[in-house]
Length: 253
Ligand code: ARG
Image 1 (tube, helix red, strand yellow):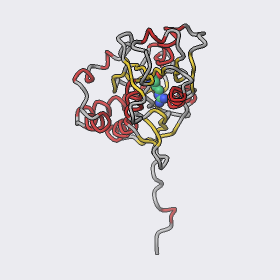
Image 2 (image 1 turned 135 degrees about the vertical axis):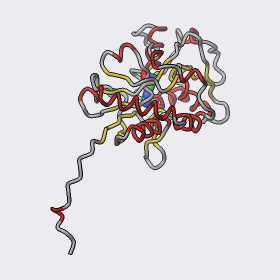
Image 3 (image 1 turned 45 degrees about the vertical axis):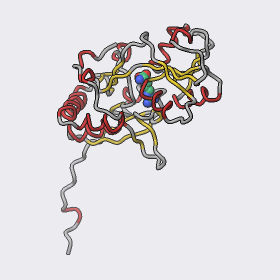
Image 4 (image 1 turned 60 degrees about the vertical axis):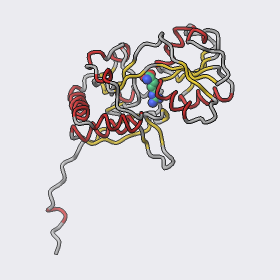
């Protein structure tokens, strides 16, 4: 007869880290038709966890308040195309940088906009609380009525399509993905030298050095063994340019 269940050793409780992500930011994080959360960031954090030997669970989390979930202990990691900034560093800790990014302007094809300065007096859509919002606030002033803030970047882009805003400013990967996936050349994107380089990092609760060390160990591991380049190539068509492998010390803004 089978041994009574009570004689089996209790399995050691494995800590499963909760990963928060605002899954409305393709190709970094989005939901597919089945409702699964997929994307570059998701594959990176899964590979990092595997390499460093910890378990994760991905949880769709609204951008607004996403960083508070770390302080509150509802999420252990935030992986959401988060730009490392000095201001954010005051309230959370970041891993080494894992992606180089920059702001980009999305406009309709017939638009006369050719540079960032042209947006000074136009209606511009941004996602609330992003670095895209910050650059537009710098250009127009925080209280400008022409800054239209949205809860998600797709909502801002919908408004561009509907004609409610003249432009949207967001991360280059997301804008390029949107322009490319809207056939018929309805939209185009514009880069500007005024936009400073940004780098994405994985955020943890301030002071969580133990988890941060594991994440950095995993990141270094997947960069060294080719996994990172594989994921990058899958999403962006070519391996990262050499400059992307710059040391993490360059990861501030
Ligand atoms: N990189 C920008 C920032 O950190 C935008 C990130 C938005 N991410 C998202 N999943 N909605 O502010």
